[in-house]
Length: 290
Image 1 (cartoon, rainbow, N blue to C red):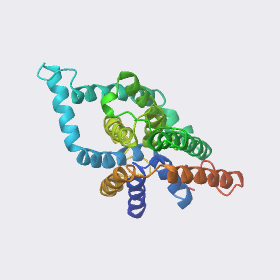
Image 2 (image 1 turned 180 degrees about the horizontal axis):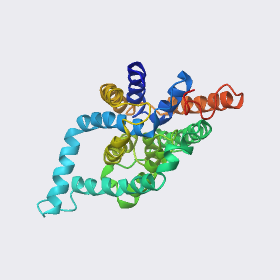
Image 3 (image 1 turned 60 degrees about the vertical axis):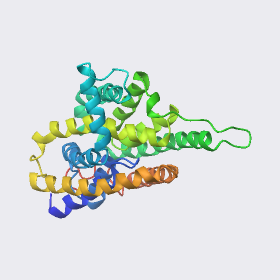
Image 4 (image 1 turned 90 degrees about the vertical axis):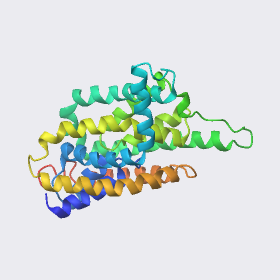
């Protein structure tokens, strides 16, 4: 991998990680369209450490408060009923599904799941799901001619059941094209949470999963065509760009809907299906260098 490739892929990772459009799919597609080698699941997982570092800094006050309360609850210094202490436990509970499924389907994640036909399908299907969830949220928030405004749930109403459902949604993102934020935010909206609450928990929930995955894949960073230097460079680029994107996205969702991302996902998926069907693009493009 050249330094130019690592810069572009790091840029793509940073731009797409927090948006509900799937960063892993865009890394895969960028390589396929450019005629590069598929950077692979290991490269993706490691560069995500950069974007998660952006989450750690952006949500540093929330994270410090949650960790302090959680550790305090272990030694009886903080009541277990404390909201922040409960959030610590809920992040752990929500991380279980992706941990179990990630280890179980590791070979599929690094192989068959990266087929462009599957990516196109998940882009479209999850885009439609996000659209439905967004419409339901908008209906509750604005009411209508024959409806009253319905108050949506905040994170203070999050329990073990909902935390586990959030976790299952996150685990779906092991398939490129699903999108970690897209799946968890969709799940949150369908369960009746506000856009801000669903996005905030989505980002907090991703921290242990992404960091664990990145550390686990470190051993493979220097194998194949991807060397350590370009991987670290891409991770740094992803961090800088990712921080800017997360700051923008958290402001965006307070007043805007997710429909632009829905239209983009569906259109990209359809274009990808057409290109593969016409033979312009191989469903395995990039896997052997071309």
